[in-house]
Length: 501
Image (cartoon, rainbow, N blue to C red):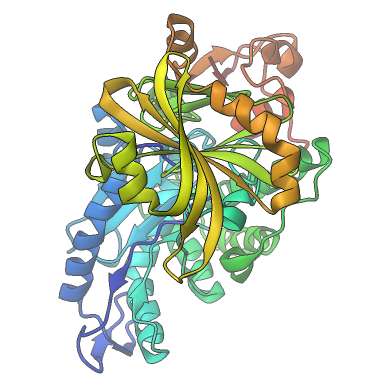
């Protein structure tokens, strides 16, 4: 089901290092010049990176803009040529994801999402992000982590993102429902780099900027982008009456963005010289028309509505509920995050009829079925007992719907407990009843948003916010989008700025 997640980045790259180089061998680190014990030779790095590269492309998809891909690749190749490992065959890819991320795999595979590109303000900042990720590869951070993990008996190497993954408004944190009642939400983990490795990558990013006549101070701007995202997430949570997002899990092991900002500011001052401009105009031209937020292949969320144009389906959440979009399911979730309707695409091999699907995929111990029609689509409702792989039994309530394109969908009622299920039952029926084939109006609403460059108006951000498609905190969002969040001076009237249409 090609419903890409908009939860924080949780890619599980699953690079097995078991059997790599046996107990390890001595390798000279290209950055430090020091000899270190490693389970991965350079050939291993290249082979493992290539293997995981295919999984990354399958999981996220490549953003379908050849000019933008070429633009990013040109910058990456220029930086890599001046790095400590110019000998590698470097690959740079823009992923079709709204997540604010960049990451690298061993062997020279670097990825940047269109999500983070929307919030960068110049080519020099883009170069800073890419330079940071090149630094992880040149300093062999992946191989170092693989070596530590093999010694610990883990034997798994996962891709790691740049700096911080943030639960900005509309990006994540809608509910913990999936982890509480279902296994349908995006799952996985990030094995984080150490604080020392992150700091070293920041410093290498600044060094590679200087080698390519970009001002190293732009690394400061890159970390500020991440810091601003954190601040905006706190502002958005406060506006919704929620607790401020915390840097829990793997994120907590990274240097705090405040400290990263201070460290890179101090480090960047070591460089002096004649640098070119930041190529802001060229960057704005490159991202003009780039998809912003949810994309066509992922399906788009518009308020309480979800539209998936390729699959030809739409859903509407009840009042007070939210839509949570993941790579494997759509969840319409109540405000408390205690109950929801989980919508999944049924694999073709599960059966050709609803009875076969229930028998093969649901595998009930007992239960009853009822034929229904959902907005003219043939449906079957099932209530009964099922047994999980651990042998435990439980009650299940779901509806199978025959959707467009001869695809079947499973709509599962889910809740934290029986009381929550009872309280939400009426809304769950309403949510189920919203499942429909796209109408002409739905297809119009399913069009993704895109970045547009406009002249900054005399009325400032309040005037610009009037045409912004996300009215909640619109002015703050526009400031965030243009790198002037948190008290920075406004652009000059007539200056080119980004907005969303």
